[in-house]
Length: 317
Image (tube, rainbow, N blue to C red; front, side, top):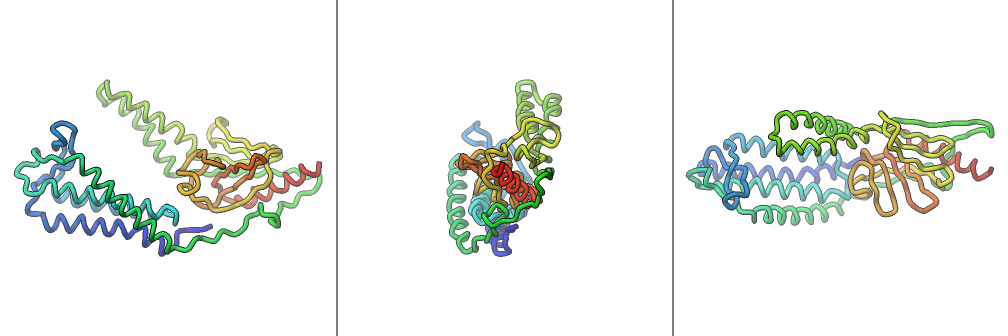
């Protein structure tokens, strides 16, 4: 399957290295002119007056850790079509990390520091400029070559005799979805027990994220004489079913969740739907309506070959 090339990984990490350099350089140049602690959180009262504080050394550490974590995350998931997102993220985060010390500069009392709302607009502008730079740099990365899959006209089929019956099933999951769902559900009782009653409604947010997230964290993909079925691995419903008589062909290709589906999970997009839990190998089914359904799963070649064989057999009946 197509993976991020070394050049693409370097380009994805570069904006965070630049932002980190600016963050540490500003702190080094202004260190003696900054209060300790710094004002780092600002509320709506008083026109953006400070209501949260962080020590100078801790601010340097947190900013560094944030940029490095973002760089690692983008290196794990970046694709050529999403490089601009890495640069936009670095631009927004790096700009805010520089603006906060600027607001604190020469302040006698951090509690009196005010951060104007315009800082968010400046950070957004920085993100936009770097996004354009990332988009331009993405053109220097060659487009990946995707080999034809089993659904092509000359693609392989799974050999079955006239009286033979076959089925294929494979479970696939997403660790990030699992972690997010577990954390969201774990936050529900904590919120109900510890949060003030007016804010306890936030527990509903944990349920809204945790329940569907856990359902999508691990799914089972099945191909048999009835067609293609995708359902949660833990429960039988909800499920997505593509009947065999609606299938015209099955292929295998690498999927970029952000570029092709706008994100991860169960996705509905113009001309296509899918259960996309990761990037990479996916079973893609073309329906007689012209729409495609994709599901990211290992051993998709076997599933596609079996579906194509079953479709051909149905056509001979």
